[in-house]
Image (tube, rainbow, N blue to C red):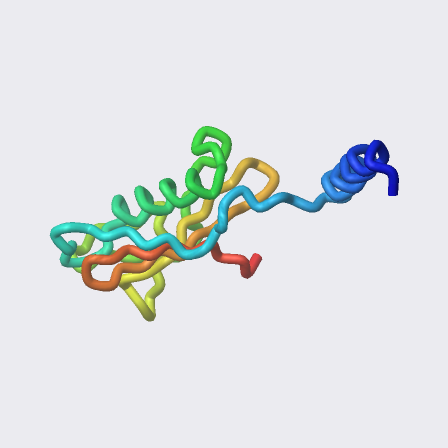
Length: 127
């Protein structure tokens, strides 16, 4: 193939992929692990939201365009009795739950869990 044809051909292939709805991964979107010192006694809603927002931003999304959604699930409670409004705490694992963001068209959700001094955030892909 002639060298002067390679660049337009690659550009055409990339344009077709983007127009067909393929997305280029903005970040590795793998689990993000945050170390918290000192280790909190339990996972608060505030800590879960903070780390979910941080992970969303690391994944390349604007916090202004992807606000947190209130949970529709029965509201969980922390060990100190505080009710969650935005953190969908798992009843079977109170040290873990899910945070949902929406841009009005799509939803992105992150599972957040606490294990000792580590908070892990993972993109939930079950939707």
